[in-house]
Length: 145
Image 1 (spheres, rainbow, N blue to C red):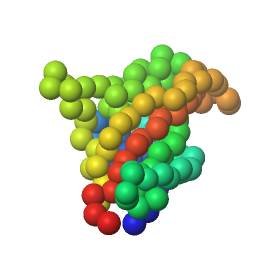
Image 2 (image 1 turned 120 degrees about the horizontal axis):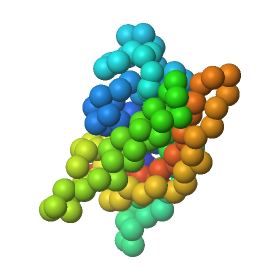
Image 3 (image 1 turned 180 degrees about the vertical axis):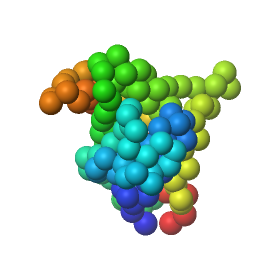
């Protein structure tokens, strides 16, 4: 069965909100009722940028997936935007001494194989709102065929 890009995206959204203690919108700014911090700055917005699939030898051709996601940190100052980007980077990439990722990322029906930072664009400002753009790749494989 092919990997669901939406399932990966919503799992990353939940992980970011929990690990950063700030709200994370899905394709748009969080709402006032978004946990844990509503629309209060800083917050993040997650944008799904596409999925490419492949497969293990002797397996289904779409059992593995490379999911590209953009996380935009939105803040009131450049320093706050960079601080939030640091929190996101740690949430996605930091590891324990055992080698396991520090922030749990649970995707139903899948195992997360790898997380990588593909690109950072740094701080920009428009109309007094600062943002910091990062792009991550989440590689997953299905657990059940």
